[in-house]
Image (cartoon, rainbow, N blue to C red; front, side, top):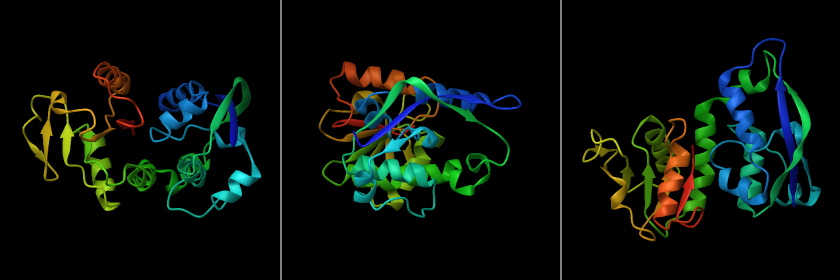
Length: 221
């Protein structure tokens, strides 16, 4: 292992937002190296203050660096690209204080748009050009990611959606099709649907059709 984190518990003087609580629950569900690799483009899968990492792994990827987005997520993405294995202890290892003024809430590098740019920057490299790319999600989340991928040299050839009002239309020059038009091996699918619970349903659908997460599709929301 190159990186080891721990489960965390969020606390604050006042109430903690529902979004942050959902994030902590999600983060704590990711334990194995396979979990971390699978979830890397969904959100930052490690809480930085809980992490220990090997010096050799840090030096291999050039250490922390200034980036237009969160420097810890940038590091996890570079480590992932280098093949580093990451895991979490199943025990609670950190009580994570949330307060006004924290970089997470105040620094523009932590804005949602910046996280999207970080994902697209590294995901475009991962996708490469060997196969066409289909973005599952023709809503706001999918279109934003598609634009960011295009800025990084990967232009999706199609969007996938289940909304009959969208199917048959054109988005960013690409057709919107229903999931039955996907064929394993013909393209790699990037899942980018913001609705709560959608990711699990799409994973279930793709697995039932023989798609394998990693080689055939990646979740990015």
